[in-house]
Amino acid sequence: MTTGDDEAFDSLFLREFSRVRAIAVRTGLDPFEAEDVAQEVFAQFYGRHSPQAAYAAAWLRRAAAHFALNTIRSRRRRGIREERQATAIATLGVAGDASSDPLQAMEIEERRADIRRLMSRLPQRQAAVLAMRHSGMSYAEVAAAMQVPVGHVGSMLRRAEAAFKKEFDHATHR
Image (cartoon, rainbow, N blue to C red; front, side, top):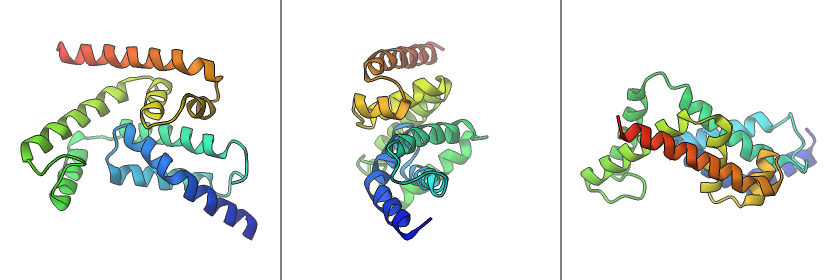
């Protein structure tokens, strides 16, 4: 890469890193894992694509959703994840935005684990559209990342939400 490309990549990184990380968090990853995913997404992008390409932001966002979901699906044991989260809670003294009440922290972590489990059962495309939309992306941004017309996002989102609800209902009736 040339110096101009490096500067363009730095600019792209500064503009998109927080959004890419937010998408990873919305899939259910903890903030530390989400940061790792975001860094990996940018590492994959660097040198393979032009940072000035019109599709750069959409590629990064879509890759964030896919990489984050693959990270969740590839975990061999749930215990490893829970240990890491317990360590993060102990280190920070809080669970995300929860108070320092241990019972509340435990409930929040259980909810997050349930959401991760449900998201991992969805088809990757549905999980990705849910993660992107609920991370604050507009329909237009989701459409660009998913490479579909904006008019399709609403129906994709409704189908994904219905699939999530079905998984939720199935999980709660066991």
